[in-house]
Amino acid sequence: MQFYGTTLASPLMLGTAQYPSPEILAAAVKAAHAGVITVSLRRESAGQKAGQAFWSLIRDLNVPVLPNTAGCHTAKEAVTTAHMAREVFETDWIKLEVIGESDTLQPDVFGLVEAARILTAEGFKVFPYTTEDLVVAERLLAAGCEVLMPWGAPIGSGKGLNNVFGLRALRAHFPEIPLVVDAGIGVPSHAAQAMELGYDAVLINTAVAKAGDPAAMARAFRLAVEAGALARLADPMEARDMAAPSTPLLGKPVLA
Amino acid sequence: MTPPPAILVRGAGVAGLVSAVMLANRGARVTLAETGPKVGSGASWMAGGMLAPWCEAEAAPPEVTEHSLKSLDWWRANAPDVQSNGSLVLAPPRDTPEIARFGRRTSHFREIGAEEIAELEPDLADRFQRALFFPEEGHLDPRKTLPALADRLVNELGGRLLLNCPDIPSDETFDWVVDASGLRARTELPALRGVRGEMLLLRCPDVALHRPVRMLHPRIPIYIVPRADHLFMVGATMIESENGGPITLRSMSELLNAVWTLHPGFAEAEIVDIGTGLRPSYPDNMPLVTQEGRTIFVNGMYRHGYLLSPWLGEQVTEIVFNS
Image 1 (tube, chains in turn yellow, green):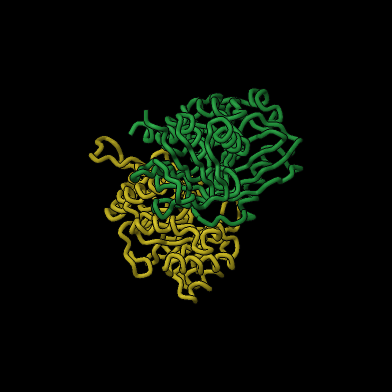
Image 2 (cartoon, each protein chain N blue to C red):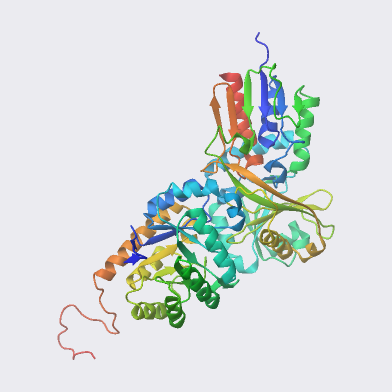
């Protein structure tokens, strides 16, 4: 699957916030074989490129960078941050976050669609952080997005895939659109599950950054996405209500 | 017998001052030169001054804990008014899972309930059900400690302190230069970066605390350190930015919200000081003593200036006297 014409080296997208040190972050990125790393741009870092030292450490990792608009609460704020990110990171990719509710960090899907429309018109390649809502997904695609990033659960909650039905429906409705589960993944089994559902990638930050050993956890996630993707390709069996004996049962009627 | 070495120490922050005092204590003739107008012109002045080897293990490598144990002893012997009341780790009700995580990563604490919280900090009675208590930790006041070290260097140990002093008279020669000038040494130490921190100093006669309190939160752990005269230091943000400009509204709200959650009595506190500083840091966030010819660099203190300076000062002294 291609993301705006680019094939990623791996379906694991890794966030770069909250690690104990840049050195540990680098070890985690390497252990994860991350296909993309996301970088949050704080306003106070952008002025005079005050975050330069950290960004040059990020650039040295040699992994494609996807800047995000984390912490923005309005479309306007997100658009401004996207402009700064394009200048700082020299990329037209932007992971668009417009937060609508501060307890759940749930996306403000109205502001999201609005910002996506503006940024797409300006030539940005927008990766929108959204809910699993089908109608919102339609609107984002109509606004020019070619990727969707629905949440699994609230950011940083580690709750996994809260609405498997919704995520499956999204996959079924948009078989050709690259889909990424963003936010809420807590352990590798959640990531494997997303890949088994047919998602094209997962984005993880807190689960790796806040682990006791981030590099080991990054490797665990790498193995999990590989397992999930492979399982999807292998066409898993269907679940069923009754046992399905692998040898004939004599003396029993056929079970309905 | 060889004459005592003449040493120039650059930078009167915590690393420079501790090194200067240790060297002078061993008999060196020390000149401490600071470009700023007073001791502690950089990050050291903004620090919380927590001496918390075990709490820091939550996010720092084990070496930090290991090397800060001796530091604790050094501070108790060399700084005025080191408080040894331990420290308390709390979480607002909805962030209590963070306490379990913090406990798994640290040691030398006991888990306590409402009753013991009330005994330790009567003002927090009935406000928190669960906490971790680290009885062996301590804290000091950087704004008293740094001037006291400077005073001792000059008045007891025969050292010299030069303020507002970017250049040393060229007719003077030194056997060693100890460079503890933080981010000013970037040209020589290109791996250094600055990590922005913001802090507040509050005065609040309505609330009394006896030990540093850490309020856990998944994104912004905040600590409140009580000082004399009803003062409380509240810190600190950690932002990958080298912008040393004024505090942002967001950071200030986060700091103030945490204090308010701890005790509503802080609502009437006066905001006495607002500080922003850049912590000199290496990529692994561990400090380092390095030697180039007759220059010894002490740098990269990150958030462990007080915790680790005595360990680094010892390494400097070792190089000067035993090489």
